[in-house]
Image (tube, rainbow, N blue to C red; front, side, top):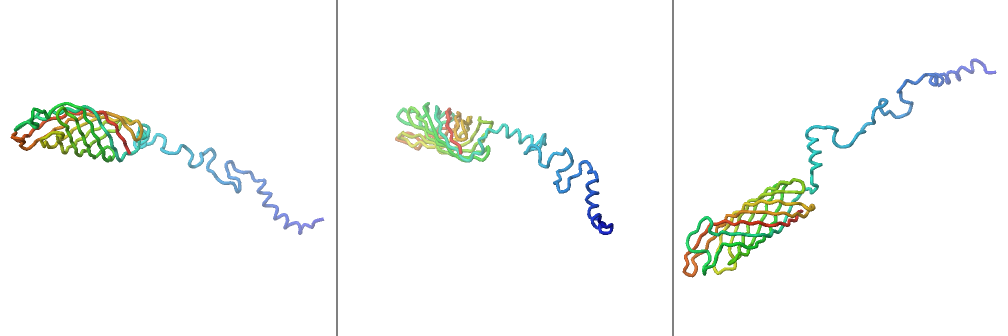
Length: 238
């Protein structure tokens, strides 16, 4: 038989545990030792679609639209290409003085096949580069080499562009020394088959100034004319 005084310490130890077991737990109260995740029914922190907020502001909507319409080509830093087509030169269309540019009944003006190469660097929509062209006319070969600056307007895989250039010009394959300069205004369109290849076409108008010193009794000559070029273009882009 347990004495009452001896059982008192044991009762004091068991009383808190019994009271805790009989006390009802409040709804939503965390269980002792369990992690707390927030109020009942609340979504865990960080839940939701990653990225831009639904709806968002005007800037976020513009970013979404730009991403959807982007051609996926990325940035372009360098380009090079080749062109081939038809070249027409009217050497004295605007003015002429002195004798003819070519002696012996030959004509500086004419129509013939032409081609060229071009290369340069690009920063977003602006490009700076160089272009060399040649054309085989009935009595001579036309050559031009110069620099250019251009504007390109990306629209998906289709890219219209314009450029302004100028430089050295000459007639080759003749006895006379015919030299001068040209100023070129051109435009075209390129269609990107992939990130690095494009096909397209261009057209340009050139202001051509050519002259020569006196030659074999013929007085020196100076002429100002126009040239028109239409070409198909193959481009490489990096």
